[in-house]
Image (cartoon, rainbow, N blue to C red; front, side, top):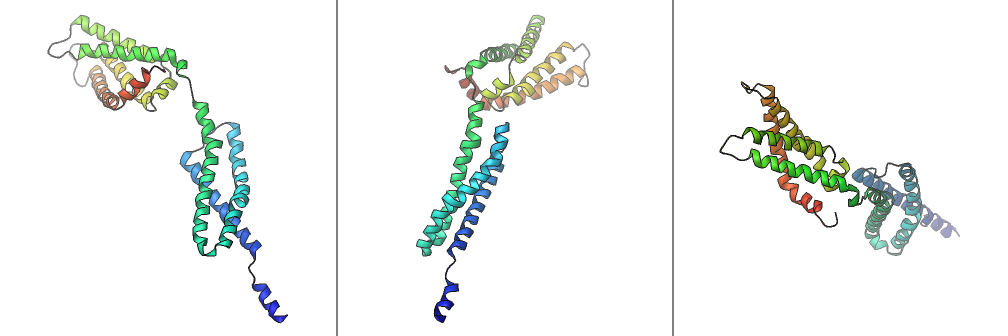
Length: 249
């Protein structure tokens, strides 16, 4: 009896070990959840997204502590020599289960909400195309090197520039974002701003202007912005044109 009493207290406490394994798996889940939250950001800003942000970790703790932890704990008891590999497998499983669940709860609904039909942008498409065409026509006149533009040509350039500026105001930001995530900034802050400066500088110019004249400064700034736009469009224009003139659009 004495022998049995000595052996009894030294037997493995499986309940305690199972509890510790569950706590460890919960820790893996919380780390995975925080990592996904930081790396992807809060994808949903509606009230349901706020509720899910609270509910998701609660449900995740429950699921990870039972549905994930228990099978791997049993395997670690059955194959004690492979405890390290079982632990690594449990970490990987916890992360990917969390990632898949996170995607379906937070990311996928946001993507579906953001989807818009190209038909919605029919008017924006017309105005954007017209602004690019008119800008091109004005550029063809100003780029005709070797001679000074006539009064009629200058007047035409001003007319086309003004039309481009006015057309741009009828193009929605959402449409520009739809064509390319960086188009809005480059289209408005470089192309259109450049044309506005060019127009204002040319209209305000007069005989005797120097490099210090306001009209000349505007035209110089216009050239700088236009160069930036040209470089950006050279890298991204084909992608935008393909989407703009696609049959589906």
